[in-house]
Image (cartoon, rainbow, N blue to C red; front, side, top):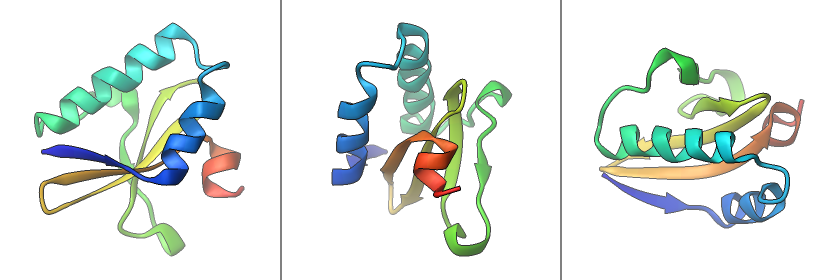
Length: 91
């Protein structure tokens, strides 16, 4: 598996870089390592499929209210958004 970051994901990371703590960043790196190695994420990440208008996408938590929106297609993990529920899902 390989990673592909959307422009919005890169922008989100720039904005989060000042507020994301070391623990959250470490959690993000560990979760991505599991995904790259095609291993299921441990339950602490609360990885789950989304429904409704975001059907086909997944999200996992990296700490606090910070989530990562992603999808997997053809051996590529597409990282779409990272941020709070309100920022990422428009809630």
